[in-house]
Length: 304
Image (cartoon, rainbow, N blue to C red; front, side, top):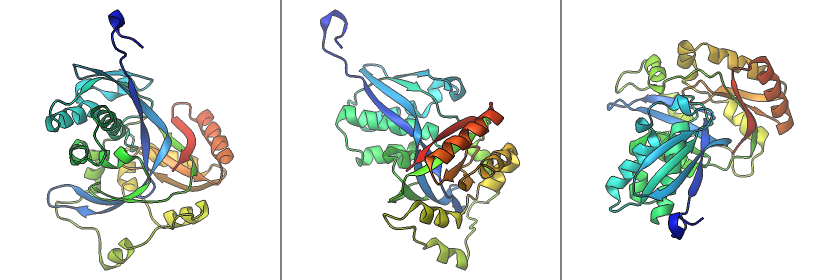
């Protein structure tokens, strides 16, 4: 596409911010600096926000999509935060105008804002000839938010520490249904309800042994993975339910659906998910739940 007056074509770059799902989430304690030490098996869903970047002189962000209004002030968006932080570290960085098509629920425990920021970093890396393992990209991801580093790669892994240590995993494709009751839950409120003091640990001698557990090897079946995941949990589920009791209703609806092998909350909520034996079961469950709860956000798809 040529510019005004027959100038050079403007290349519009695009990427996706895929939803992050915490298949497990263990809180090992709270560090002396106030950050919580976590261990989580993370997968990514086939539903995503879409972010485009039109190169230009001014850095800006436009919002569109069904959930754009839920994002709040554009100036506070993590897309702009990540871009500004990277611009401080890359002399003469090329940027431009971002457009975010927002379809993922906000404050939902699936890292929507973090995934958007990660997509922005990938687009800026592409525009400026940077590699994703560039130390400046890694630093900015960590400074932007705890979930941004894992979202930059958007690959299944075990995430530990404060989200800064990532160990790749070979997950099978997992048919799933994801549900958010359209009720936002602030992460800080959930951790506050957990009630840990700075420097307080939740692990004992038995827990240390369990921390060394290994997940199924590459090529393991879906059934083997579900069995292994079922032995763990999400430590934030109980405190999140104290804040929004509807989370219990979502888990109950998923658990009651035919073919649900494992049901759990993701992240700090309120999004919950179920893993199914096959995509047909997942689709049928989603249709039934959507009909019974038309006010809920429901997605049937896959995790990987």
